[in-house]
Amino acid sequence: MRTYITLLFFILLLASCSGDKNKEIPDDLNIVIFLADDLGYGDLACYGNPIIKTPNLDLFSEEGVLLTDCHSGGTVCSPSRSALLTGRNPYRSGFYYILNSKTFLADREVTIAELLKDNGYETCFVGKWHLSVLEKDRLDHPDPGDQGFDYWMGTTHNAFDGPANTERFLRNGEKIGKVDGWYCDVIVEEAANWLKNIRDKNKPFFLYIASHEPHTPISPPPGYSSKYDTEEVDSLENIISYGGVKRPEEDLSEFKKEYYGTVSQLDDAFGRLMKTIDDIGTRENTLVIFTSDNGPETPVTIEESLGEWDDPIRDKCFGTPSIYRGMKRYTYEGGHRVPCLVRLPKIIPGRSTSNKLFNGTDILPTICEITGITPPEDQNIDGIPNFNAFLNDDTESKEHPVIWYYPNHADTWFRLPQASMRLGDYTLIGWLPTKPDSLDLVYWFFNSTPENFELYNIVEDPSQQNDISQEKLEVMQRMVPLMEKLWVEMRDEGRRIEN
Image 1 (cartoon, rainbow, N blue to C red):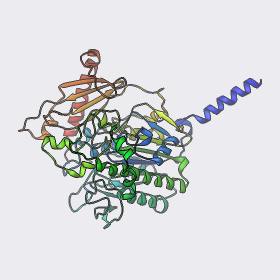
Image 2: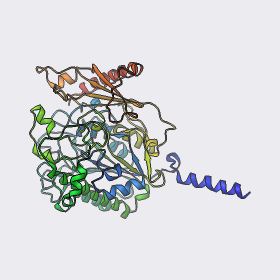
Image 3: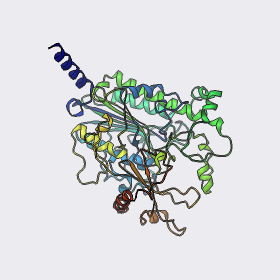
Image 4: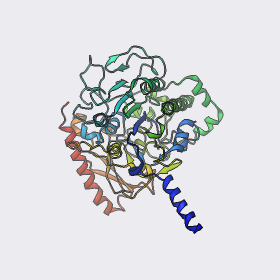
């Protein structure tokens, strides 16, 4: 009898400690998404970085799950932000490249903020928007308020005028004048004020906060960078991987402390936001997702080799994709595999790791899944309900193709592929035909189809060094037609959009 009771107690204990999303998720669930900018997969201590100190994010990772196979929806800024909010591959929305006067998030696109707002949530956006021009005197683009946010403060671009000493912030459509401080500090202070003093506390909340750091220009307070001005850091920097991307021949090592310090500054800002969540008593019923919009910025060498840019402000870029190939803009793994930490107390087990694939397009359908909200029925949603990835649970998993694009068209020694598609353990890499000089980039990108391919087993060969396209013909016969079909389908839907 005693053995039976002991066994019963053990079973009940396991049940109480394991995640059960269907049974236990609170009815008043709050949601926070914190998006870093150009933060590499290997830039956090909890992801193995031997140099950068990130104690707040390390602690956060122990309180929830660390994802090892998470990806942004795009390989560059604006497309990945579009995918995050809509659940759609950005190519469908015409967002194949970064924001410009004709490429922006159209008002017809349904965002997760709109869905949550329509279902009783109070919604807030703070930070780098980069999906439309917010200054109405320049272009009449939809702003965060048009896309479902009750309250917002943000900037159109990257605050290139300085860390945050700029007059480019707007709040609810109105210019707010000069803002003193560094970007991540300013937006966390604004978000904390909204959480404490402005929001309707009778409603659950959705907060989307998008940092500028560690995007260029990189200039942290001296107290952060000086911590990394040591001989030990100099030695450790020699073992950091940059995705196989060639670094500049000149010695730029004096700048690395600026990058490392900026990541630590971002870590502190995130820690203050989590303290605010605790202070207002919402920790237990708040889902928090921390991730990045794409891989780390490429060294300035890349653009110099093309004769396109000589951009010394990017000499301070020392982000790393860890063992993965490529960096920002690459459709190889390093361009879109990103850090992702998720916490929901009592549902997501602490100190856990998940190796399940989760893509930026999955955020909208996953939030719909756990809140009981119906996703948009009149739009093609590419993401899937994927909360199980946070539980490292594959009981409902199935092979689902995920595809990334970037319109690189340079015909040089490092000519990059324009497409990458993941299906199960395999990643297919695709190149478009060479763009003639006479063709406009947009016309070429919207009238071409991948024609050359590489294939990698991403589980056995995560660094993508061994092309097995000639060995795995049966896999190629399955994946190539699927990539071509998805490419054309998404391309043609995006091409029809007239902004």
